[in-house]
Image (cartoon, rainbow, N blue to C red; front, side, top):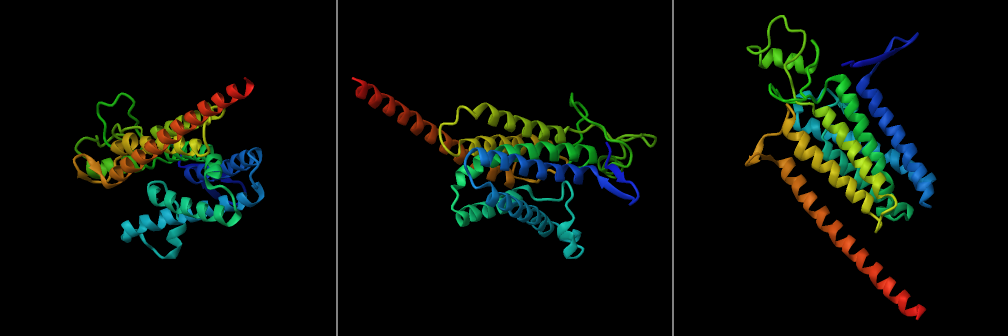
Length: 285
């Protein structure tokens, strides 16, 4: 773990690992989205600005909703700009960013699903980089996992170590220099982003309809986040129906809708292909 990645010489400015990788995720996502937009014939000059606006609203919205849920953490309006891992509402951030994206597409006369297809790999890359930044900073750590095969331990002074010293002191020896074993939630996030990116790469030459990339990547990211990572997190939301939290129930509904849309669109695309092939065969006769 290395929460401070480096210090800028001569200025004594410490650059946090999480902040650095979030910035890297946003910049690399912008570059990738612009390149793909140009390749798809979309107005990259206008969409580049839309990307920045959507990201800004998404981050501030995610932070604002988290502060509403944790009012004791509010320390003035500057708190909205304190972007820390584990202190953002992911669902709210996505909703804000998506809403702004749709508005910007309408404003510029750009097909929304075509732009979302372009954004899909950028989002997958951003999720992977953000997860790596969280791993280095020790934030977003997993629940106590004494028997987990791939459990992680964080060093003294890390968020996990301090929480265990405070809440699980009977299990953590006084002389311990690392935390108790925890689930590798940050690595799960990284793998989820890579898996979504891999799906996009595989689909590139196999896209059957506009929007397929966006739906496929969204399904992978939501499923991994809500049904793999979330149950492992130390700060998991309380269950409301069986073992499921409100967020997981909402994610289940979204996944179900997206799966139905994906299946319907794929079947329609396949039917159109068959019809076109049949007509082509008749025309040659």
